[in-house]
Structures are given as structure tokens and as C-alpha cells.
Length: 338
Image 1 (cartoon, rainbow, N blue to C red):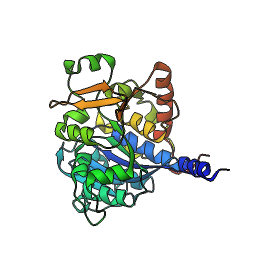
Image 2: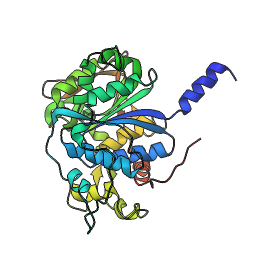
Image 3: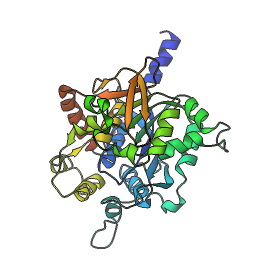
Image 4: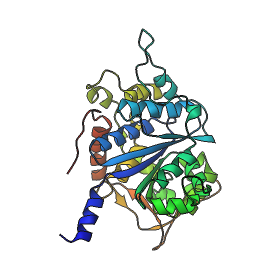
């Protein structure tokens, strides 16, 4: 076999090196998305090299640690935002972190200590990127753009002599981002409804990151995940392999049960790890612009670095089935795919 071809094949088979940025604690889809990532890692399809938290509440990071520990991966580094958006606790992160049995023993263990001692998201990301191969990391953003916008502005440090923009360009392959809305009627008139949540809650960071990001961005817009619901019935049907599951306990506390929930963040995970399997359509290339009010506009351009995902009726069924299976996969299932 040609050596260069062999090298390319080996590169393709390598697990996706995934850096997750999440606003864990605001919506339940972040928790489901993280469970999906762990399932995909157990299948040998990705490696979660780190998690940065863009929700400015300590219980968000503690809950991430709890899930990682539940899946026996408590060593995954976690970095936290400072002076970020949504400092309120939310409805499930603290509640699940503090769950205990009748003897006061926590139902779920954690690995990390006090969140006040966690590294900053920017410092940790610089360290992880500096230690990564060139163009090897896929950045998966399912929250606000705060951390990544600040990363692009960061200065050289002990981990790299490169500034943030140059470091990002050197080490990142591309970005998958749950942000914006790209349905045809919204593209024609973005101001007919509120700007999408992940953009709206930190507009300056979203504008800065999307405008300056030196790598391709694939957007999974609001309309994609909204069209694929996670069924409440799955909580009883699919998690019988464990007595208590941190995502199930969170789901039951997020909203009054029973409810089905859009899978916004899960669609981004699926595309980030399995981009070529036909789960989604992809738009023509173009340029995404975010205005000062958080409204997103897309302009086709042959040299544009931006694309957005689409999903048809047939794909919705398949995406839902795959997401449901992965989110509920038993944590001891170690299946390396050929």
C-alpha cells in the first residue's frame, strides 16, 4: 500500500479529538449531549480531551465532573468561565450534585475538588491545544461563545508562544457550533422572533468569535434540534441498566415530567463525531454575520468558511434513533468500532 495513503487511512481511523464548550445547567440537552460523547468515546469514535464551561455557576462545572466520573473518566480536565453569562444555578445541576441516600452518602461521586480551584477555561484550552497535534482538535460549542472569543484574544503564555488566534488556527481542524437559526423563513427575516439563546446571551462574544474564527464553522441551528425530540418515555425504557443515572435525575428535575425535549446540542455532537454518515444535509459555503442584537444572517459565498446543517424527514427519524441509543448506552460498554 502507498505509504501516504496508509497514513491518511490511519488518520481517519483515529478518534476525533474533541474539546467541548458547554453552558451545562441551563438546558437538559447539554447533559444528554455529554452522555452521548461518553458513549461515542466508549465506541472508540472520539476522545474528549477537555470541557470548558461557559455558564458562570460553580455547580455547572461540578455536574460536568459528576458525569465524567460516572463514566469512569473523572480525569478529563474542566475549565471554568469567569464573569460570564447566566450565574444562576438553574433547576438541576446543584440538585443532582447534592443528591444523597438516607445515610447522607452522595448518590454520585465526583473527582475534582472545589470549582474555585479549577483552571480558567482560556488557560486550560491553551494548554490542551499546545499539547495537541496540528489541525487535530474539533471544537464543539454548545453554549455561549464567551470562552472561545476570549481564547482568540489571549496572549502567549508558558504553554505556547503563539497568540490565541494563531494557536487556534494551528491546532484546530474545525468548529461545530450549536448557534443561530437557519430555517428559510428566518433567513429571510431574522427579526421576526427572538435571537437564538446561545447567541443572545452573549452577543459580543458570538459576534467576535464567528467573525474572527480562522477555521471552518459548521452551525447546527435551532431548527435542526427542535425538529428531533428526546422522548421522556426513554427514561424508563432505556436506563434499566443502572439504579441512578445523573442525566435521568437531571431530566426529571429540569421541567415537570413528562416532557419531550428538543435535541439541539445532541445534533451538534452527532455531526462533530460522525460528519460523513448522512445524518444531516449541509448548506453551500458562506459567511455568517451576527448583528448587535444577536440576529444571525447567512450570505452564500464560494470562499466562505461557514456552513449550516439541514435535516429532512427521513434523517430526523434516523437521528432520533441514533441519539436515543447513544445517550442511554451503558457506561461499561466498551465497543471499538472497525
